Amino acid sequence: MSKPVIEIKNLEKVYEGAVPVHAVNGINLTITEGEFTALKGPSGCGKTTLLNLLGGLDQPTSGTIEIGGVDITTLSENELIDFRLRNIGFVFQAYNLIPVLSAKENVSFIMLLQDRPKEEREARAQQLLEAVGLKGKEGQRPVQLSGGQQQRVAVARALASKPQFVLADEPTANLDSTSTANLLDIMEKLNKKERMTFVFATHDDRVIKKARRIISIEDGKVLSDE
Amino acid sequence: MLKLAWRNIWRNKVRSTITIAAVMFCVIFAVVLRSFQVGVWEHMVDDIVANNFGYLQVHQKGFWEEQSLDLSMDQATLPSDQWREVDGVRSVVRRLESFSLVSMDQNNRGSLVLGIEPQHELPGLQLTDQIVSGNVFEPGSDQVVVSEGLAEFLKVVVGDSLLFLSQGYRGASAYGQFVVSGIAKISNPELNKQLVLMPLQTAQWMYNGMGLLTTAVIDLEPGVDHKEVKEALQPMMGEELELLEWEELFPELIQTIEADMAGGQIFITILYFIISFVLLGTVIMMVSEREREFGILVSIGMRKSKLAFVTVLENLILTLGGAIVGMTLVKPVQFYFKYNPIDLSGQMKEAIEQFDFEPKLYTTTSYIINLNHGAIVFIIGVLISSYAVWKIMKLEPVKSMRS
Ligand SMILES: Nc1ncnc2c1ncn2[C@@H]1O[C@H](COP(=O)(O)OP(=O)(O)O)[C@@H](O)[C@H]1O
Ligand SMILES: [Mg+2]
Image 1 (cartoon, each protein chain N blue to C red):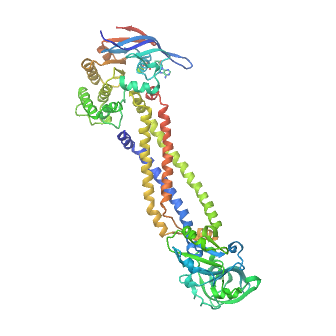
Image 2: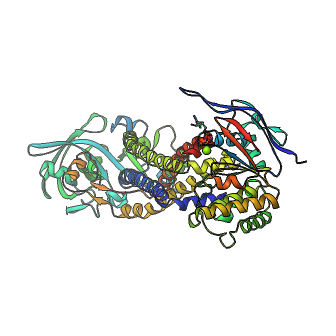
Image 3: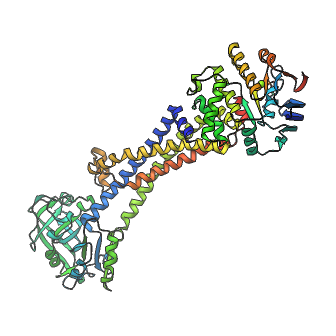
């Protein structure tokens, strides 16, 4: 039996405004170790908001989010930043990378933030870049890489910090189908080989097909979970 | 981390160039402005003090205040040999100075009459290079040398006779008629309009004060600190004499300099305002350009303080670089114009001469000015980069990444 990584209870997020928006409207969810899960739903249904809450990038209006037994809604700003550094990997939609650093430096930078020794940073960055199929591109700057290659560097970076899980918000939105398939294969392989938990938000059928668990969201609520 | 800051400098070359160039030109401009201002005064003080009046003067107590011949010293009993023994003293120059009405035909003017011994005088009054027509007077003769400006005003030429009328020692009336042996160009424009030079004995005779001096100028070895010499000489002055340094002799000069410096400060302040806005512009440009990147860095786990540090570091390298380059590049300019002053001409020249300035712009080569302005601009750079710190500290990763 796999242990739970994320447990969220009665999660709500309301964007105040002339018309308040219930972007997340009472979600209960448990993500366990080793999952390869897609949050699906039409644009505007609340996927990004939910993912940002899970990643500790945004504060919920009410409810709790426990990650490895820690309720992250109670952490201070700096505690939360340090928590993200140690526990969560992020892949955003696009332009994830630091433009002035090479592919390899982008991957090792996060380990530098973790104060890992130089030899370990070098070795792990190299190993991860090879795992995402970018051997020979280590010294290239992001602008010299294609969109798909950039996203693969981002995946390598997300894994570099040895997080508990990786959150990816529409990681394939800007990619053609070859690159999409490629990226998905890599994520799937890492999921199996490193037992890394992946949660991604998407409305891309090619991604949804690959997922082993699909959570459909509509109007900030879970519609189905299979 | 240093690497990240360094790489970021090369990333937007336009921004970095603007920052460095703005800082550089600001430093250069401020230093040049200041150097000319300080340099003109330095030159003027040097001329008045080193060439004409000396850094230190000894009088009978109260003479400088009252300018009365009754407060004179007896040259026979003056312990000038003892003063000469003091370290840094080159010689003691004897003078009798007083005011007199000087006239030629219908023209007359109140003048400063100096009885001097040219061969022992300060460089400005040795009358070797200064004579523009005629010759130096013979010692003890009834000849005088008139300054160029005064000669023009009185319309005298070499060989003319001048009539002097004044009050002498202890109320005696003093008058005399002397022949102009030469006309001298005195570098200080103020003096050039009113100075008459005559042999020391002739002056003593005219003022009915044989053997009397009003002034003993302490001539110093080059490069000696006059304050130190003053301290050493002070105990030898006794009850009767006063020892004054140039700052006490010409307090108005100090005031004028300070007022002028304050005036120049306004320009420089405006300059600093402009540079502040230019730098702020580049920092705003940088922050908005990198907003998404800042959001990603904070999202993946970089502390804001660390991010702010790297960003400020980048700006500090740029401003420090600009300041150092500016401070260095301006140095040759300062040296050049110190020894090759700008000669003003035309209207400007007349206007400036009216205010008794020499119509030449000198610079100073003092390093203090460069360091001061380099440091000020650098500090402005530091303060301006606090804008980036503020933006980073209040950054919300979710919002900054949506943009
Ligand atoms: N900062 C915000 N302020 C107000 N409303 C927001 C904000 N962010 C998202 N929303 C709204 O919340 C809802 C969910 O948005 P989002 O989570 O981005 O959906 P998705 O990622 O599924 O497209 C949408 O109606 C959106 O307009
Ligand atoms: Mg979204």
